[in-house]
Length: 308
Image 1: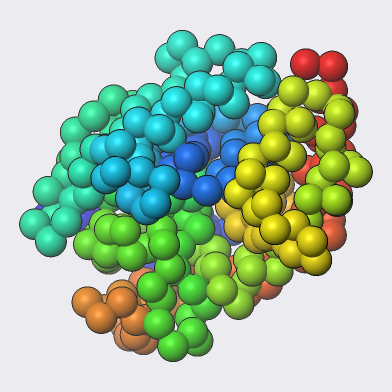
Image 2 (image 1 turned 180 degrees about the vertical axis):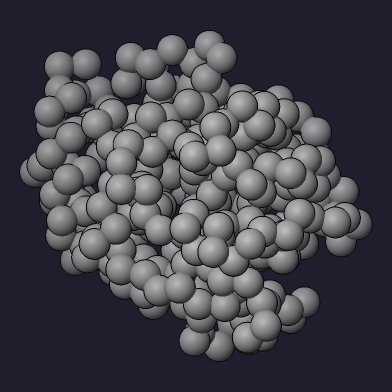
């Protein structure tokens, strides 16, 4: 598969924060654990900074699903549930995605989410790229790139995936679910913002008492987020959980909350480690997150939503 070659100055321009309201779609394995629900809520409750045009269900397979297809279906159902809590219509907005990974054969998956992503990307003006925020296995995005390579000129991918570049391995859940999809996306040359997990977003910790204090009783969505947190972490005494996925939304809202560097795009090996090739194109990689302003912004928006 031959991807268009982007001029490096063009890519560097696309890798700068948009500095204005960003058009985006959200690709999410929403039922995988509990952090995607916070990220989806955060995106939709940030209309001054983000124009969310669609939400796509991504596949996943862990103890909460029987396989990637079942994971995608459960994620799609969770998307619909969250939209109902938020009073948001799902018609023409939420789309089921891939039932299988692209796998070693790098076979693109064709489905409603992938085709909607391609359509929205191709309809984007040259000076107004579509931000593709991916917070699960990157199968849908890689499939769209394989089916329509020309979209790399129209999109910027922002992905919560892998660990910090100096971590001894990068066997992080989103990445390891579909390693070939991550390799396709990294190697395609698409403008790519990577928000690593361990060593970066692992700072985004919260607790059940904090959630109950600041968003419990404020709205249906606030109560639901407290509920799923308690169900996921019933051993809440002295315990916290990372809400990883809100980091991608936070970078789009305010890049100072997730400082980042331009660096040569890491090479993802078949051993699921990062390797360095300084001849590769540039990518943007977050190196830290400022936990307090991110949660303050999220909690404030949930409280302001109230009454629903």
